[in-house]
Amino acid sequence: MKRKNVLLIGIVIVLVLFTTVSAGNTTSPTLILNGSPVDADTKVIDNEVYVELDALTQAMGGSTSLNTQKNTVNVSVGDIDDIVPKVIEAVSPSVVGIIGRYDDGDDSYSGYMEPQIVHGTGAIIKSTGEIITNAHVVENMSKIIVVLSDGNAYQASLKAIDKASDLALIKIEKTGLKAAKFADEKDINVGNTVIAIGTPLSFSLRNSASIGIISGINRGIDSEYRLIQTDAAINPGNSGGPLVNLKGEIVGINSIKFMAIGIEGMGFSIPVGTINYVLGQFEKNGKVIRPYLGVKLEEDWISEMGLPSNNGIIIASVEANSPASKQGLKAKDVLLSINDIKVNSIIDYNEEMKKYEPGSKAKFKIKRNGVIQNLTVTFAEKK
Image (cartoon, rainbow, N blue to C red; front, top):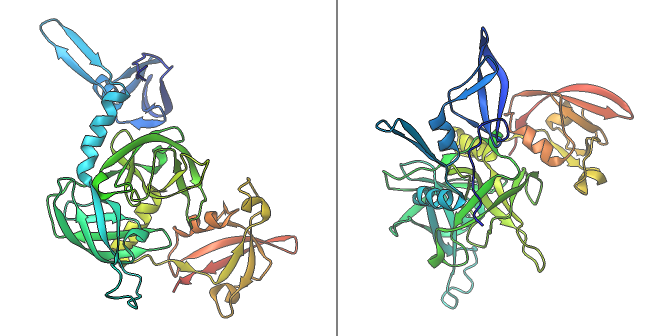
């Protein structure tokens, strides 16, 4: 049976937030449809909700048409079989295949063994040829070739790379390309339908699509930052490709998956918040410049097991002559919060560090020998 979105008039499907601007007994609330805001003219007059029909039906994958002769308005709301093909068609021109030779730096077998051919995926983010992909896709490629959705190939140059986030920026000399759009991270929710587009297993399968949902967010799996979990099929070669919502917006860049007998539907993507952070650093500095403190952190066993914790993180050691040592931090201190934001895992700490640059200050709340105190620290540049 087809899964259909049915237009219901009322509060069953439309949740309206009344944090609004009021004028008499009229308010203009923000319309939230299935967890995502809709750019629609919405008003509440005498406790009755009036919504711009065109915007609402478009947000649901449908359309409206006015028949002036019959004085009727026809509303058509698409089902998943109508929406997904349109999304794939719209996004595919922004998805590229990436292929090249793997260079491990060892030429001892030169002349006896052929270089290994590897491939992955990328997403065009600027019409002038800038493409985002995974760092692990391109970091050891001796020659990077980008193949567009129309089959044309171009040699690419590596513009910037950040292994900590597993993101890289490459560029081809081509203009007039269709750039992908990014979603707003606050609109990413567990249960959202998503589509992965990429080049799984073989280059002949480029621009393959798979569908699933967002299974979880804020996952700390083999990464310095939080990841999105999805059950959309992600296979070798999908790395660097986009995970998009039903608006065709990138919610993440596919990065890793669990592969083992008995494990299915466990793929992970770098969320758009981290992507924007890294791209902003690339544009400003040509690389990611991170704040440096000079401490080694350890999680308690509760956090290591992936369980909720409010115990903070342990400062296991402090480097000599580091900013931490000069500003009073000591081994065995427990870091509880940074500028009143609680940190209970190393990923919490890394996520919070996105807000700071070398030279910026932060208030650390720590617990030392059972006593809570505050210290102000100034970050240096991480080398």
